[in-house]
Image (cartoon, rainbow, N blue to C red; front, side):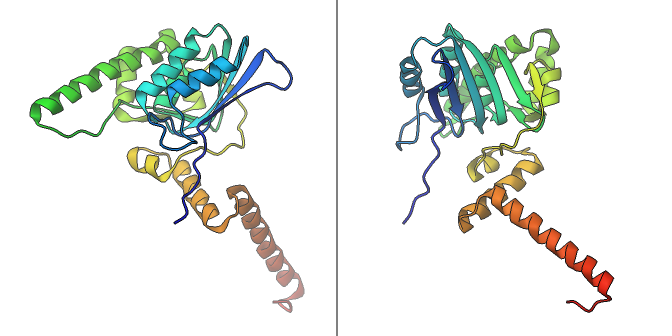
Length: 258
């Protein structure tokens, strides 16, 4: 049985124009255990970040549905400790723990069609009543810790009470909304990058915007046909234009051409 190759969730490379600049791409899930070669833990992220050398600028590009909270927090702290200036670019989606990593940026930029999603941490749990109560208490403590990351970035633009309301509701913020709450610094023109989100994450999150669900459906069709979503859009547009032209020709020639 064939297995679909997973996209490596990050990549680090030195900029072709400046050896003191490193470009980092977080373009998929953030994982805790390296079951596949494409998976990456916080430890392997650190190893490669160290291998980038003595850089003074880190450009971090994010398009991720999130993943393991502790791996993400570790990555956030690595970036905050690094002496380089960190420029974060949310290319399409920074959801869940990926949005926390985004807060490590000295500047956070978001195109108008990108999104930031924040929610309370959650986990799968089994056990007796006492064990489940402990897990709930642990999640509360983790949530409080993560919440401080957003508040530190937002400053006076976001209150603890309002942030908690948004976390409770699983809030999907547009670039303009993120800017208003102080969670991003620059709003850019819309980009052409599609959000990276799989069926697994679509099923986990409860308030996924309709456009992301539609994009995921397009990606599934593209995988089955071997045609990219962008190519599918081009073919659809050509087909629609051809139909419109045929109707126009029919109206001119009195229906002689069918």
